[in-house]
Amino acid sequence: MMKKLVNIVVLVPIAIVLIVLSVANRQMVTLALNPFDPADSVLSASAPFFVFLFLAVIFGMIIGSLVTWLGQGKYRKRARNEAHEAVKWHAEAEKHRTRAETIASQTLLPSTSK
Image (cartoon, rainbow, N blue to C red):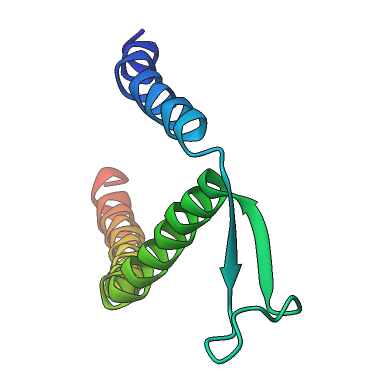
C-alpha cells in the first residue's frame, strides 16, 4: 500500500511534468557537433527539442550514478572485508565451541561412570 502511495505521489507529478515539457517543446532543432562548420550534416542531428532534453537528463542520471557508485567503492570494499572477517571469526568461534563441548563431554563421562 505504501509503495502504491509513493508511486502516485512521486511518479504522477513527474509524468505530468514530462508530458508538459514534451508538448511545449515539440519544435524541431538541430544539434550540431562540429563547432567549426555547424552546417555539416554528418555531425548533426535533428529531432524535437524534448528528445534532447530527455537525453540530457538520462545522460546526467547515468553519469551521476556512475560517479556515486565509484565514490562509494571504498565503503563496499570495507564491507566485504568486514563480512569476510566476521565469517572467519564465526568459524573460529564454532571450532572452539565444538572443542569445548568435546572436552566437557570427555571430562563428564568418567565422573558419571563411578
